[in-house]
Length: 168
Image 1 (cartoon, rainbow, N blue to C red):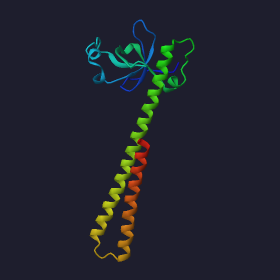
Image 2 (image 1 turned 120 degrees about the horizontal axis):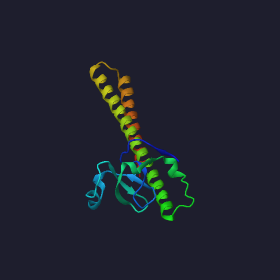
Image 3 (image 1 turned 135 degrees about the vertical axis):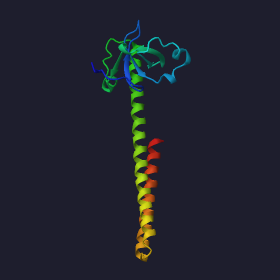
Image 4 (image 1 turned 45 degrees about the vertical axis):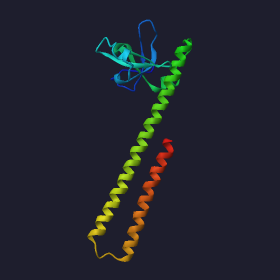
């Protein structure tokens, strides 16, 4: 089975075991996101808040009863002879994993777009400083510089538009 032993953090997909139930697919969540009734019911300091799939029930589960689960186990679980509800849990957890991956990809693209835009703005400022220092620039230099400014800003706007298309 594709289980891993690592520190558990919010956002991790896990198999969590509660007394009287089989190990069930869940996601570790921040305690602040728990309903008030569940948040107050923490029994042990060595426990994590989890959200079970597919019903989105919340509970505190002791660390010893939690196993990290690799993505490929969610993608192709061995569901032979498993309860229908457990099968639905695996499918819902897999959908949540896919959504989490899309969100991470969007964040990365946004950060990359932001850095590209920052680099363009920095280059624009550098060009402006150079122009201010060199009073004796020719008309040809001025035209070339303004064309470069325009190209830099157009590139920045294209990057932002591309990112917005991906997000929406």
